Image (cartoon, rainbow, N blue to C red; front, side, top):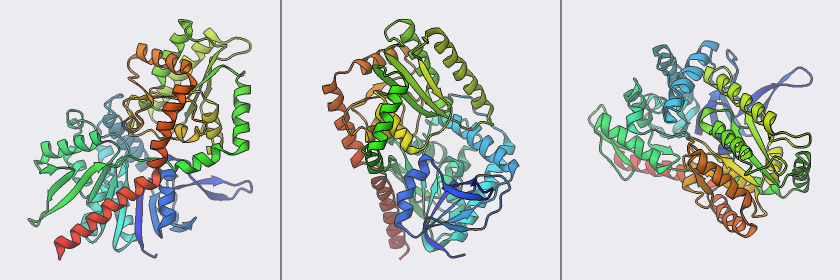
Length: 475
């Protein structure tokens, strides 16, 4: 197998294996946020991507797809259950999202996490050319940077953490807290979504290891008595904004947006929520606030419709099964109480949609509701803003989403404060066009300037700087 100068390591490959009409399986590009974010980067380099192909016990040899070498990592059904559904999504995910759900700590999950991380590290080591660069992605692979460094000390290693990193008082609950930090410290550059996340990480390093941290730089002692530097800073991820602008300007997408409004009965205002079905997204709080506004008659079903897209997520994890049941019961109750023969209070859609349909939805919506209880970034907020080439629409944005650091002209809200959330929703539906335009222009300037290319370039520039520093120290 040929070796690549630049290798991305992620839990999943950027493709899905799907059945064709002739019964033959084929590979199709995945719709996920990480793939969308890294796609432009991979097109600019002759690189490789290491990841799981998405099905248990599926053995696939490395292959080329759309100009990128894909290196599949095989996982058994038991490993998917223990490493992914267990440790990654029933331990790390709730812990790092401020214990919104209770994390579970099982040693058998941890053992599987270590084993699988090692397999990813070994695959990356084999796929990377001498002196190459490896960029590890996200919380499923926190141990890979250090494992990779032990296998290949000639590599420059980056790690990007897409979800929040919790305050020390929460992080300290993790029984394997030191092992995870050591794993991440194997990277030369450790990227976070928010300045606060990088600060939380540095504080955990100081508390548990007493390493020196200053200005985002961490002094890491090595076993041979030498020291090296690791950089831990915020590099907020973004979207390929121009691609959303282009779609929003297509006549057929604009026509579809008009169809959506007509299909909903041409309400005066359409509110929109777009989320994975996840307890961190604040969907329950949003529905509660909207239901109370209808009950208080501050909004009416004749004038207002809430469209809630909730794409399926982790459907074998118990807390997600329970969440879906609760949300669907809530939607049914609100619709039962307030629907008329001609109008529906909530149009609930438990499915994913292609990008063109999502852009049409963004154009149809007067108010975008992003009410996450905790979110690393939330790219939906940026997608909505990018699409609003008419400088209309209102973004209601949780202060607990990473996007709130950049999108200061949104209506920011604490989603736990239901009364404040209700007031903000009403304010959004009543906002004059001139204020909408002023806010949206400021939001669009931020999103268009700080796009995914700028994100990747800033992180890769930090990796280049780290490589140069290592070379200078070694000479």
